[in-house]
Length: 489
Image 1 (tube, rainbow, N blue to C red):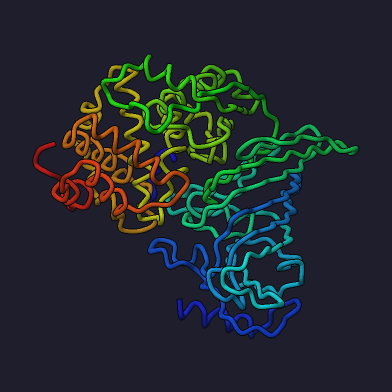
Image 2 (cartoon, rainbow, N blue to C red):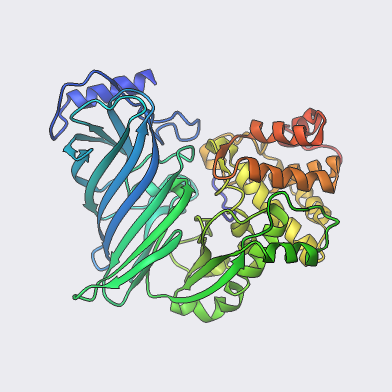
């Protein structure tokens, strides 16, 4: 995301009380226990749910921009991680019309943003099950502490959906915590004359007799729900291909020439690039959209193989979307934020944050600090601006020292300058400590080891030390966790 200034047992008892208080639908005799309502993330304790792991979402959505009405069906395939008598899904607003589990009607109850389903029969630990929820309503966005909005945002004649950190629950029920990644198939039906874009590869586009347009999108690789997106409206598109990148074991040292690394990448296959821009900004954004294959190729040379089966971007005219977001495979930008530095940042997130995803929101610097440092590396290699110059500038700015990047004090601070700029400073100090060759080995190896997985800050520090072959506690204590600004940069 482009930086924004953003100023258990009890859960099980609550769930049982809700179920006893009047669930609707069929019930059956069960002996398991309810999954936890919330994963107790320190910043968003009610986000996510316990007792199961989602493997796949199949979302079928029909939207009417004139009324703002969204009609949806979510088919959620998951595996139980305990004996389940009930489980929760996160869903803000919207009205649930029906729910089933493995085809049988399931009792369902709403309490705030928690949708509790009680299946007819207990789900044993380890069993795969499918929950289907049919819902409708006018999605309402979530307003964050700084006044920015996320979730389902209405635009002139359409909509755009962005989800970081909790907005995705405004348009589909799910396990909305980054630790539970899944594959997605998203089917979108919109009125005649409009189009709709989402994550991954477009596998189908058809027009019904009444003129309504349906598109189907397939995102095969695991994705955190906050990275899911939808853009509906009138668009002009562009297509291209980008190199997937060299094998993770290929030479990535700073001494390897750009041309040599590019020749290796060119032999590694390619990925389709699809961009979409609203007509008002299509012409002004066309040249930079056309640079996406080159930028991705350069990043693949530096970081390792591009991790997904599709790429691209969506550019919206300025309006309700006030920031860019690294939505998986197809980042979303308002026109005012669509510049080269931001594009480099959001594309770098496809590696840092989207493929290797934080295990919890405290680990967000693994996304934003790394994507910010990717900007510095890109400027160093292709724009003749040394990363040390960017480091010195960031070091001098007092706002970057408000708190340690690995320990934001509250949810409203997750997108504050220390997470981005001081996070990038951590990486530059690591690079200066271990040298360019080892630093590049750390970056590429980190991305390879945790490809399509979740990771923590402790995972990264331990991995960096293992590759460097030395104790780096002094570096982490000062730059990653330290409360004050060092005397010298």
